[in-house]
Image (tube, rainbow, N blue to C red):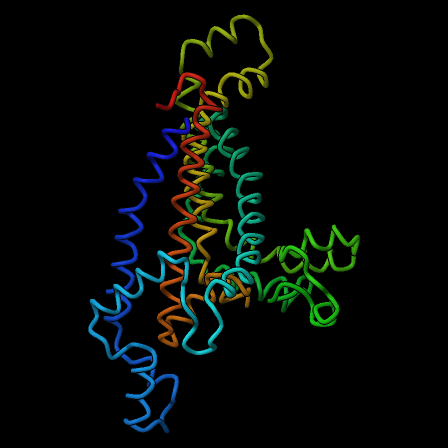
Length: 336
């Protein structure tokens, strides 16, 4: 197992190198100049050139890329051009927000998606199957920005049940001291149930918005995997022995159908942790996605480069964890 993990980690190096190269090239193909953006319309050409020289933007692109790689090897992602804050500090402060939102969104997807897929497979071609698959198709097709805005209008503006944006109310935010950066966990650690209720209320709408697509995909994959397993001979044998139907479904069928489900969960969770740009932007959620989006708008190269590389590393590590988990769900799988 250890040799397999080391081999996989070494195999990630070319992937990460390619990601850094593509991000660097595409970012420099975008029209505009960070120095001009930073100085504004009143900046003179001389001031722009001085700032470009200070930022290293007047160097040839190959030299800029080599300098960027050298910084990465020293685990230095640089500083923001606009704010001057180290990128690693920005990631450290924003990552818990994205992690909290992603975990809750994935929980929503799992709690609804897996049971919906199981019921659809067990009741194949029934109204329940048609309802679940039609709902999953709608969930995949709905634009995230439209769904988010509709939820805000319905539950925040019209019904006034939930807050429209942010992570915590302003009156609580001034006195709320974070421990881990995950507000729900911090509220529990402090036994502050007022803050806990407020943090959960702020999570509901963005988590529903972000979890809709993973929910739909997980439901469809679960149904497909369960249908394949339910047609196997050992399922008919288990039923012939008189085992309860729920035991056949959960113990025999679901356990053997779980590998493709786990793969889908890992891929979707990695995508969520990468930062849902649209969801975080719509709900003013101070996470990785909205931060990268701001960096793109302001042509802040270090933010975009550092953020995308962090997202890529997170994604590939989650995929590695999913691959390793296969042996837990299926003892026949061995890694060498």
